[in-house]
Image 1 (cartoon, rainbow, N blue to C red):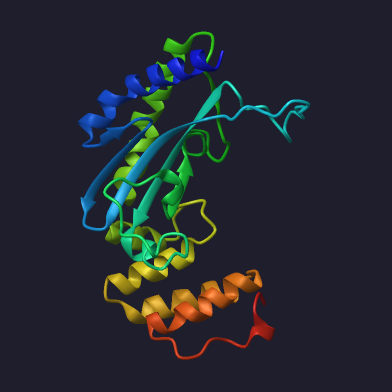
Image 2: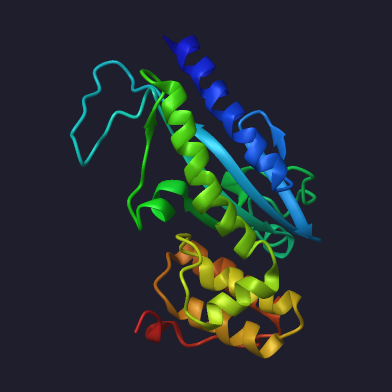
Length: 227
């Protein structure tokens, strides 16, 4: 059954490849990348649901069994964020970026259904599913990637308070983009606003170490954080 799902996944990805190629994306296995601005990479990838260990059970709406299903992830990666992230700072910005390494993130289902996640089956009418998903990618995923794969567009959307990403570190990403774009005052203000929101102690310590890179000599008293 596993090989059947793998083959079905390959067929779904192949059905999407022409749309992505037309939009300038290059493919590597189940993922697509495109870069229209130096240090910014747009990413789309197909993620298969993992198999549950023996004895696992499903609770509909709370704990769903996603084995035999797939979802579509979207992301944008920025080199300025890559250079400060603990998980990536020691490595050069790669020529091909994985979705989990991105700094703006959404799932196709969230865009297509206005906030609800979506997983599609890898059995049954796979050709029909492939056509459906390819259509959704063309209608929702590609426009989102087109919209946010330049720094100026991201900052414009942020200023208009538009929906950009579901990633909880969005304000930090914006601060680093402001810094990259030569807007230190906006970078410092956005960074401090992010710092003041609730974080665990380890993340706060990391932010304190990062602050001098944005020209911030002192941060708010921790007793006022989150208020």
